[in-house]
Length: 536
Image (cartoon, rainbow, N blue to C red; front, side, top):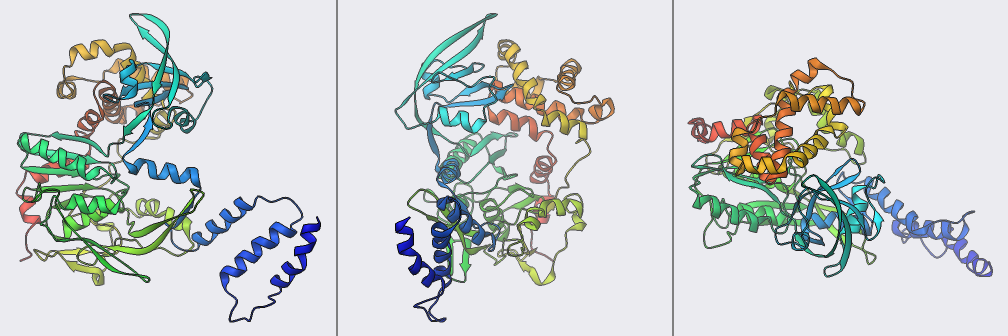
């Protein structure tokens, strides 16, 4: 109390502006004085750390939609998926009715080495029950992950030969790779397909390996899938473009009020690009953002290939990470991304209006843009021409495709939404694989055979719908029938993923997906050449 009264006159003097002329008084001094006043004079105890964090967040919210603050824990979670690896036990898992169900173990990883197998259920970690206690996925992962070289004890429930038993394992954590390529396979003898889910530290390396592997298998043309890819590292996009464009081409440039223009040039991994000449089609949609837009924008600007799908998200602001000593971080927007032709990738926004910005995709849907190409309003003043052929393309936010593919909602019903929201589709697939794993492995020697021959039967769908009914989803036979192709595709994809790997899911999904089907049709037809030609 005595200490507070000693500083009180000084504090009051500071608040009154003593010692400052109006010209000398700076905004940051006002902020510090306000925080000091609250901490010294406020009627109740305050958490100064939370107070400062709230002030920082408040300032950033007045700027743009992508400047942000993250506390130490959030910062770690944000960086981990892009870093390329983390330390853990090396499993892919799903939560099925409050129980951790092992889908697969990482080849050569810690769990595989001690004998965990697909289908095991982890029910306790370090003597703490995680099954049947409604624990969040994030809390479970915190228990399984930890520093490399440390041990974690897990209790596993295992079903084998009709018997149920518990087995205790001690697993030594190790570095686990995080892959950014979900699938890379040959669609036909000459057409390759690669799906990238994010642009991370090792994405270029993964892509280079995939390109080399597919070329050995006869790939002459490529479908690059960036649908739903939210972006990631700028350098990963630039490095990837180095495998499709000549060395030294501008991949993207950045510029801002306090950041002079800087051009990022392409540089192949080896002496020449791995795939510079074959036909290239890039798949995008309204959720493709940031580095995905840099990649698709440069491919379009340089006439290297064609973009198929829907207008991309429009995230073209450059954030610079500014870390604090406590592990927290500000990601401050310092510049805009521009495609090689000078198109600003960022869609328009109003400073401080985060709600309107967040509703942009909904607005696009309501205005019909996602379903009808003629609903997209192009502004003539934002028209530019591609760099090699002089084709007209438009700026104004996001990358507009060369070939539009409408969003197909005919099979998406309220009944499907409710069944999916209850987690029933995932639960059904896990249950089906659990009961039929050996038979599925016997019948299908590889995933190509599975994709070609496996069929979701009426009996399987009836079981799913009964499971949904027990979960409180009101039966709707008419909507169930309308959504039957969608139900069947997702169930088959999830079963294939659990039996084989993630690529199997996309092999199943791509037979259904309108964007992929249009990309494949285009890359095989003469329309590719007519769209990718100089205007007459």
